[in-house]
Length: 240
Image (tube, rainbow, N blue to C red; front, side):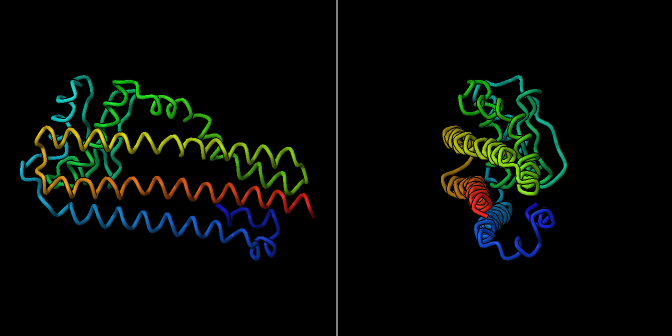
């Protein structure tokens, strides 16, 4: 996305823009976090759950243990595309989770169940995140075009609007952190107390969910660095 606007701001200037280092740091953090979660999932995807439960079966058991019986469990294509849809009360598990009996699959399924539990209990951060979805989408889609349009036409109000829009996307990612960490905490508690995973398997589950959580931390850090970059570019443009 950054390079796609290079022509608007002046290719040579963008190429030598010292603030690009902030974007590169964010990219490196994201790559490291993504590589870690993929490697951790791959490792524990080879370890079979001693209870022999598939991701779908584990999800059903976790939901029932939490007193939830109105959430459907569906299969969705893709790898690690698992998610809970609070609007339709549907838990969608990916190819790598739905029919797999691995420790990784069980803990990923349980994590998504954690979101269903949050929905049932109207967990504050989840409610706030759901409310922020429309404005966060607008912010992520329009922030950069509006920001660079402001630079091109020397319209400081547009530049400011672009930064504010980007802040909305950052706010969404910030609110996402407690939602994801809490869902993992709820999942681990049920997996442990319900005896779905043994003590050794629980160690693996913690590692998988911890690695997954770090991707959200890295995404937030990357966005904060991008926000800082926008502010620095705007200030430099004011001085020019």
